[in-house]
Figure 1 (cartoon, helix red, strand yellow):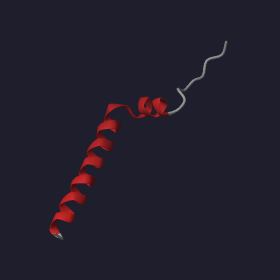
Figure 2 (cartoon, one colour):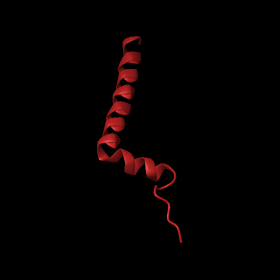
Figure 3 (cartoon, one colour):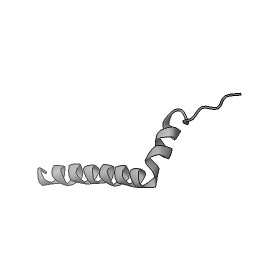
Length: 44
């Protein structure tokens, strides 16, 4: 039997990025949401 070297799909990406990548994109996404929220609050 031959095993694949990498895990297919999104699980493979998560393993490659690791925790640092996960937190980077999490914080980046939260900052964009906050920026949009406060940006719209200004124009109210």
